[in-house]
Image 1 (spheres, helix red, strand yellow):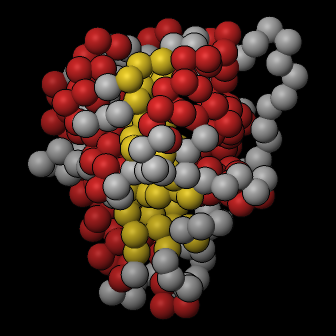
Image 2 (cartoon, helix red, strand yellow):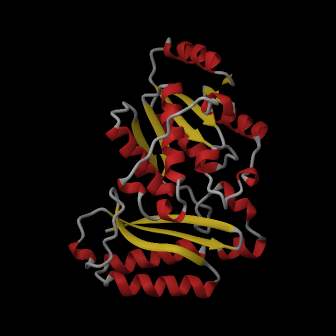
Image 3 (tube, helix red, strand yellow):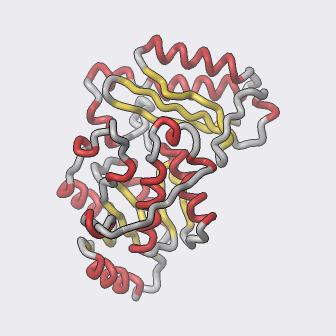
Length: 283
């Protein structure tokens, strides 16, 4: 497995991999890898591409009330996991390579970035779009793999590539879950044992709500009931919404039978000190 920590080294490794006449696939990560990340590596490998992963904890996507320094880091463990997974190249950019002192450009994005996470975390998607654009320019992949757990992020990155004519195909990979249904996340390690036992309630609530909507139930009262159940269980929801899967606009005011598929249920809820995200398709 090739490792690059400087742009010149990355360029040399990229040229070496390109000589094998395979396209290059990128899996962008912030490290603290788990089986969800490794599923992205596996999906990229199945495509026949040479696989690169990046590890960079991006300060630009953390808000002032979010603890950038607390985000989990385990470089040695991450590199070992990537080597075992068959990754070909790892890009570990220093902060100065991503954000030079004289850098003057960031990427603002509207559309699918305006609501939900965009409203709850102002500036978050500016940070995501900027770092993804930089990674695509540095690594120059043909494809990039993202997990569906962060559904809104996938749509934001797709819009970035479409609007700026960035020739990278975005490949979403289904959410990887623990046996009890909890979506895997690097932040799950911060749940207390009691919170970890309660956390799967979030997905169970979403799944039950999706089943009810698919059977023709009205969305608005069901969304309100599900939100109330989450609060009663100990969650503090930021939002629970039925949205258009691509545009991320709310569609809960109309019967599910009138919704042009696909639709998506999305949720963000705090459990203790941990903010959990999840989503499921509807219809």
